[in-house]
Image (cartoon, rainbow, N blue to C red):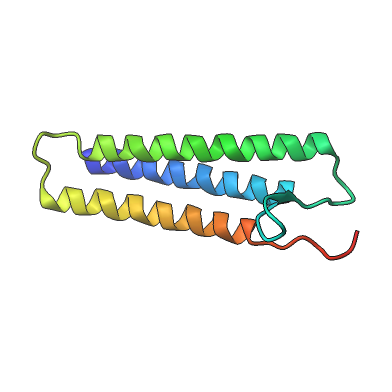
Amino acid sequence: MRIVGSASLTITATLIGLFGALMLGLAGLSLAGPGLTVIEYADSDDTERAIGIGMGIIALVVWLVLLLSAVLVGLGDVYPKRERRATVWSIVGLSTVLVMGALIAVLATPPPLYH
C-alpha cells in the first residue's frame, strides 16, 4: 500500500513539475543569454510574464514537497524492505530526471537575436 501511495504522489509531483517547467518556458525565462534573462515576446506584457514565472516557481516548489512526501510515505516503516526502497528511489529518480530535463531544456532556450 505504501508503494501505491508513493507512486501516486510521485506521478502527481511529476505532472506539477512539468507544468512548472512549461510555465517558465512560456514566460520566456532563459539562462542561455548573458545570465538570467526573460525573452521579450511581442504578444505578452510584463504582468503575464511575472504571473508565468511565479506560477512556474510555485509549481516547482510544490513538486519538490510532493516528491519528498512520496519518499516519506514509501519509506515510512522502521525497516523498509529492499524491494520497496528500490521501487521508491527508482520512481523518485525518474521524476527528478524528467522534471530537471524539461527544466534544463526550457532554460537553455536562447533569446532571439532580433528585437
